[in-house]
Image (tube, rainbow, N blue to C red; front, side, top):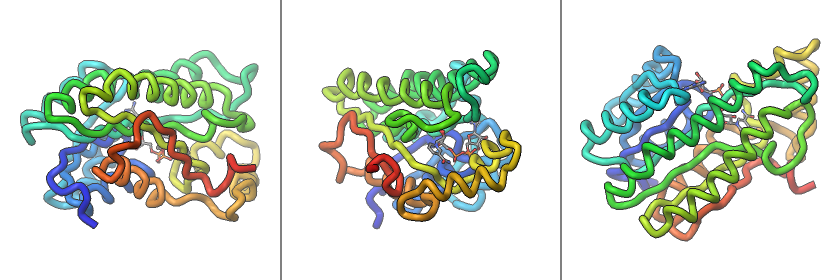
Length: 251
Ligand SMILES: NC(=O)c1ccc[n+]([C@@H]2O[C@H](COP(=O)([O-])OP(=O)(O)OC[C@H]3O[C@@H](n4cnc5c(N)ncnc54)[C@H](O)[C@@H]3O)[C@@H](O)[C@H]2O)c1
């Protein structure tokens, strides 16, 4: 399918995991993609693998001047912006009493402020390009209580609320804002979050065991949902939270 022919997209946190899969799927569907990540080498590797349709950028989503410059750069380069995927995120595995204030601030900054800044600069650009789609990466942690994810759940819940607010504010401008709530997706993020446990292998096995469909969700399954939300097929999907979780929240 080439549902994104001619579209111009930014994907943040695209140097790894879900973001890399989204960039790959978007290019395969005909889009040009700005592969943006705080890790420039990772962004370069992903963009290089995607060929002509992709460009790599170093971006820290917590820095307004960098987000603004990236959006401006894409407008200069490609003449417009149609899709913004606010995907960059970090997690911390802790209950509230265990959460250090600096971890709370970092998780809020990258996930929630990063999504706010991505929308702040991309929404006017998408509106002025004739309308399009914003896709924010929330999590099932925004919908149900997950053990040891206090700060992360708060940030992802904030993203869900911000998604709905922005969806209502900008629907009349032709900008559709939605979010995806992935379940447990097999990416390097899992390694990072389980490293905080005494027995990382046991923590990984426990995460897999809690999946009703018996396996982790794949990054490509999240990318398929993102491609749908970015496409014209989703024109009536506004302010939605699309759950892709193997049944975790159905229990
Ligand atoms: N993996 C999961 O199970 C899962 C589940 C639900 C939601 N999510 C969300 O999906 C998104 C992607 O996660 P992933 O699993 O692919 O993780 P990942 O760690 O593989 O990739 C995240 C990427 O974000 C980049 N990044 C981190 N801080 C950044 C910053 N300040 N500016 C720009 N880029 C930055 C990292 O360099 C990395 O390349 C995150 O928002 C995460 O919270 C993941």
